[in-house]
Image (cartoon, rainbow, N blue to C red; front, side, top):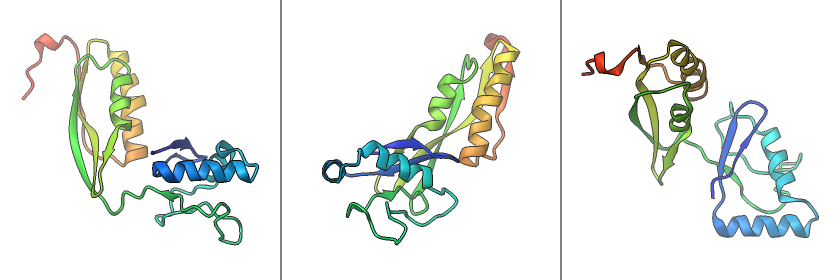
Length: 159
């Protein structure tokens, strides 16, 4: 299981194996703590600029529930990038979905990066830039160029 929760600075994603998730929920219930509150507290205190794996600890560094809940670190994985082109991009709903999507295996993390977009409406293309491209740059560190083509797709020649 890969729960995702918004933190004060970013989106946190961490892995909890199914049997550990059930154990976590049981221990939360036994201690009288709703598991959603424990996860919310974990995410509120999560600091994404720290590269080390984090555990759900109390102030003394002890794991409150006796569980190892680790943040899924991509630093040890090979990143595999897939280029995405968007025809009729609109304001970027599909593009943002692609930007958020990832597949993680034991040793690889597959992500997408935008290559080109097209829409007939210039305002849609500007909105795509403010939505998707901004997310790609600020949240994923994308530094590449995106070919943004405004106009009738029948008049474009893509290589």
